[in-house]
Image 1 (tube, rainbow, N blue to C red):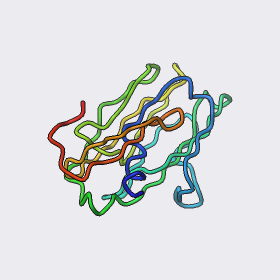
Image 2 (cartoon, one colour):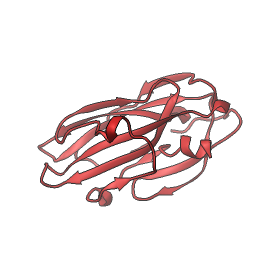
Image 3 (tube, rainbow, N blue to C red):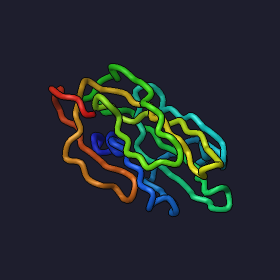
Length: 163
């Protein structure tokens, strides 16, 4: 079960048809008093503490607020079998106003996000913070609601990298 929770956000897929609904995943602790990590139309940066990864997301859409969303995330420690992260990095920015598909390169797991809102296109650009754990690989992936692809992680080091 820990591996399932660990990989809820690996890889993360965004599609336009899901943008007008609210999203809530899991009965997780989303931080102090369930506060949002952003306010409408503002940028934000969220990172899990070292050794933790994103396991859940909560989002509320508002057309009145520039077709923007409030966001909140829940983190949990990575499974002990994965050990400590061997490296962490920021992925390339996904530009606002374009359709995109995002995974962490090098079999990384999502451990944070930063985002900036652009009123000219009523959209956000995103950058993902990813961490790699002992070159473990995702497998047995499936769609999770309208936004996510969920994968399990191997118990052995991977001989390949995802692209």
